Length: 307
Image (cartoon, rainbow, N blue to C red):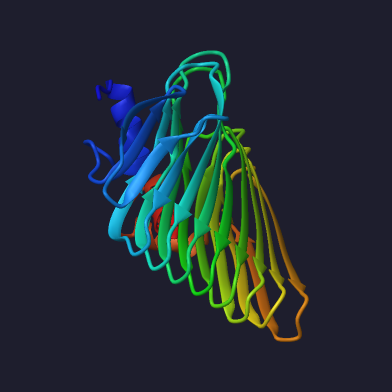
């Protein structure tokens, strides 16, 4: 597997890869798989009806990882990819995805990734998805991920959803359905700048007794960018759900937070929180007394907020 400097740069940003990963992986570049490997417990096979892959993880698989990053370096390329994850019972795995687009041309480049997770009983999954854009071209870098999570009894999923920088337009849609005792934790970190637009849409259905969900978004909107965070938690059983949007607005940025709760069971306990504000002047002043410039102080605060 040969990678040029741009591909290497993108893989480092979105998946922290500097070499071929250990374990199972599928690396995709410009609509083609450029490297694929299965392991004894994790198989990766291409789909035959649409573009994408099936990842099957055996029952009882522990302490293994799957890397499925995507990079795009061709201007004007648009693709739609379907990846399905079948996680067996009693497994404990990490899945690292993400997409990086470097667009140096005048035409829009777009990746729409549809990921479906079928998580078995008592299994634990950590899912990391990072999005990144670069390149000096006038063409946009567009990413529209769709994530569907279907969780069996007593399973747990932790999702880290990050948009680092450089993505011009994105609609991020996440749907989750939880059975008895299942637990979902989502941590979204998002920053927009210039004229960028970002929409995050979450719908989580707590269908089983003692199921829980905690969906938290931290976001920064700079320059003339726009963000909309829309999160709905539906309690259909005795359950606990929490959603939170905590945002910093700067320059002429705009942020709309739309939290929603739907209780269909008397024992559903659901909470939402939303806060939008600017960086406090005293925070900047304090850091400037330590020798930082105003711009450096702002950046330090933002880095800490999105950590």
